[in-house]
Image 1: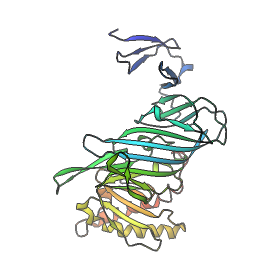
Image 2: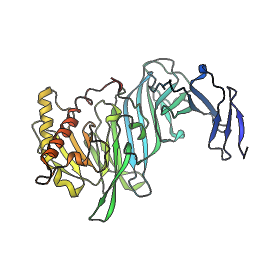
Image 3: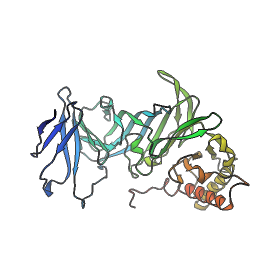
Image 4: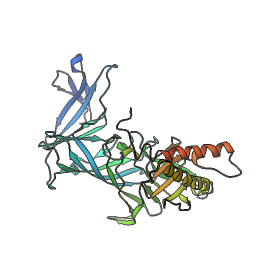
Length: 394
């Protein structure tokens, strides 16, 4: 059939593989109702001891997928390295993550987490046991319908084990204004388009940036390291611990190494790589460092946000009798942000029009809307970040 050959499938159906051997098409006939659900197809490699699992979903319109992760593991800490290449013709993200986890149930033989549109370098995937010994892997699985990446272990895990997963991967700065994406604006002074990298992880966008347990109930601490060009600035949820550290084998990019976050949900993690400038509010009674970031040509329109934002932050501290738990709060005006604001912990991103105000030019109604948007986003530092739902329907 035009250079395509058939393989027998265990349920009596057939698969055909393209001549280049890199893709296949399954033809499934006469599926009975009892066979609906998730199908797992195991692919064995003749030159490797490890297999790959591919997952198919056969459902009726009335059936829905169970999108929840299995409950036999819980993440404790992420160590994340991301280098977004914010350059014309190269909008990729080079990444590495180490995830420390605890086993909650005995007898499980897999690690299942989220990954969406990421290239996983399987030869770098390693799992270490409680005594730092390397655990043997049987294979890998990709469930695209549920955006799962599955690592199959050779032996069962024991309840209470502490294990560490290590993965190298490659992502992209997409154009979809979700996940880790590239934004842009026109710089009239330079007569050029400037690019920046921005995150918008709510509600399931973190898995587009790095492999993770991307459910709100899977809270963990995050230690973030961002690679950037020397002429740009990086921002994340916490203050920078070491800035501009040399990068091995790359003298163009440097590392910004961030303080570890409190335990939090992955969708609250946030990064911005840009050439933005900031206006800083006077340090208030709480000692919080409060800045508002924007493009340089509109930086004079962020003064009101810096002034009112700190007042709002202190108001919520006094009203709730709970101190803001982070040492800083950054507000960032993004040219093409999809929502009015994303209330990430310590780093709130806004659509420009929702944050900027120019005295004598902007209307009183616009001033009121800016105050309302900032108030709503800062309130979520407590209602949503400090306290978070277990699942989105709650």
